[in-house]
Length: 246
Ligand code: ADP
Image (cartoon, rainbow, N blue to C red):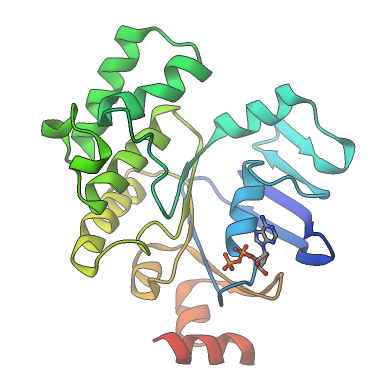
């Protein structure tokens, strides 16, 4: 097993949003997280790279890294965890006053302190990979939502993470722009990237996911291959959710 999160527990004030969640991810696998709004999907994803700090729980990578949130992890350990995963946000979160290229080079240059020439070359390659080779010097407001999200994906890849995290990456997009972003994600899946995707795109989950997790009310209600969870769920709660959104 590649990545394992155990006992992840997170509250906001009195509201326990994640209740002792366990999740495992095999190398090269795609895990899709589905569930009703407010069930804790985004919070779980953000806990996986310590954008939210759980009160309890551990995350291990490949037997060579462990973070134990109950033990107040050191800043350096949190930084190491963050560099292991690239996050793609629902609303892109690009720097508005930086070009596509500068958005992609930011992390490797200033967080990882890599050489500028090397980083520029890497960023060009990544923007080419997501189909934006001719948009390097444009600013976010000069790009469509789908193009901005593809910059977001290139930026997440630029730190050369071990895991890619996607938080509803297409839900802010006009319907005609969803396909271009899903295509980039399918390409990454085919290249063997390990990915966790919070999504409402059940068709997409069915096509690419190795495992689907259905969350409700801060717990994983059911997990299994897409043919089970999406087509023949074992749990009544899963069945009701799938019927509602299909
Ligand atoms: P989902 O992604 O499934 O829609 P979220 O993880 O966004 O669910 O939210 C789970 C619950 O946590 C919701 O009740 C939400 O209102 C609450 N929540 C999320 N983020 C915060 C926050 N920063 N402060 C307070 N409550 C929050």
